[in-house]
Length: 274
Image 1 (cartoon, helix red, strand yellow):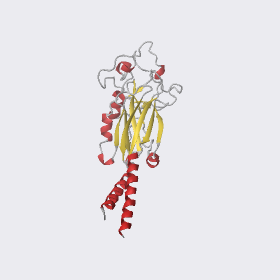
Image 2 (spheres, rainbow, N blue to C red):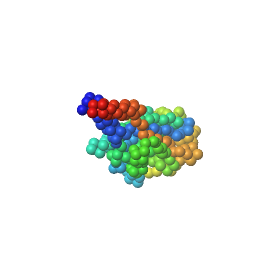
Image 3 (cartoon, rainbow, N blue to C red):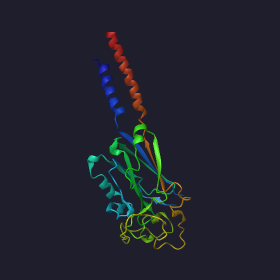
């Protein structure tokens, strides 16, 4: 076998591995749909899994991991639980390095296996300001990436829609101990340390009347923009998630063309040697 043919064969094997591997990179973008002076959300924890991860269940007491997220926007305990079994090939990360405020977006890239190990998408974030409001998908099978893996492209869905924002039931709703106050002039100073509010000892439940029962609401403070259950103010929910398959770089296709040319050259040389 001459050098050109050997190089061509090795190159084609490498190209075969590139073009036929199941691995896929995706971009996840979170856009806050709130109007001016509306709600913010903490950096959004996201995880890709095989359907075996359930972040919460309504009607029961919140886990300690969910409590940390819902009260303080701290997703580290949730992330530790998600990643505890490394053999499951789960992938996770955080979208945003600071609160995602009204009208802004944040994105991140993730490398996935492109199969059942990473087929389902979960998310979780604290709603700001609040004592323990959060958004997350309680159904682990709610968002499948199967079509994205097979056909590329992208898809979007809204989160924090009417009837889908929850109270963790772990802390009494009180503006003096709410996280995120500093983002909204007119509210009391931000809480000085995590887990400082009074225990509620309740269960996870849907929020029906946002902020109506909060203690220590400042006199004259306008809560209108905080009404996330208003169809006119939040017609697309609190935020929109867009997940896109990142296209294969054009350099790969350029390399493919070059390798095909080398194969043709190798065959021509072999014909001339007969």
